[in-house]
Amino acid sequence: MAWTAPTVRTTGELITASIWNTDLVADLLYLKARTDAGTVGLPACLGGSQSQSEVGIAVRSGATLDKLLVESRPYAWTSTVSGLTAKFSAVLKIESAGATATLIIVNLTDGAPDTAVETVTSTSTTGELKTSAAFTPTSGKTYGVKLHSAHASLQAWAWGVTLYHAD
Image: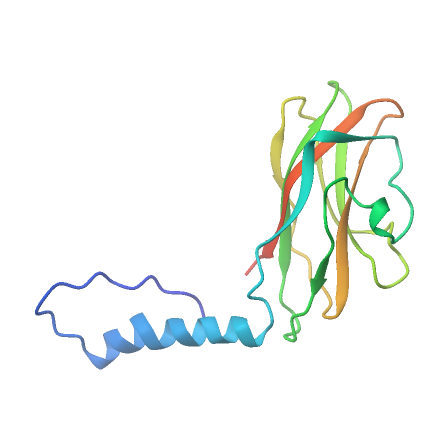
């Protein structure tokens, strides 16, 4: 079931059962399904910073919050509906041409906090909006984002990180 934009009505127009069911009932059921799924909190802003950068080839290892992207926050996926997919987007920037900024989303709950669930990369030196491929988060798990540059001494930035439904 998908959201259907309600039709603008004029005075005196007859609203049939079909119109009522499409414009009102179906959309309310759609919203209720998202509420029941525990996904109303999306999209979620995970943060990031235009003024704070990361330097280094490897992501900071570990599941504690100080290992995440500067000025970002974790997100607890609470959906009770299996199979829902998500994407994340962010603006990425690298200090110098020829290098790559890499932002990964990781599962902080299951003991592999340095393994990317999904990745976006950019070689832009001015900032570029990037969107990940769809992935399937697991209910009850907490996710966070980590950033690194593919160069030992070049800075990378990521901001505006947003997690949202791919559906």
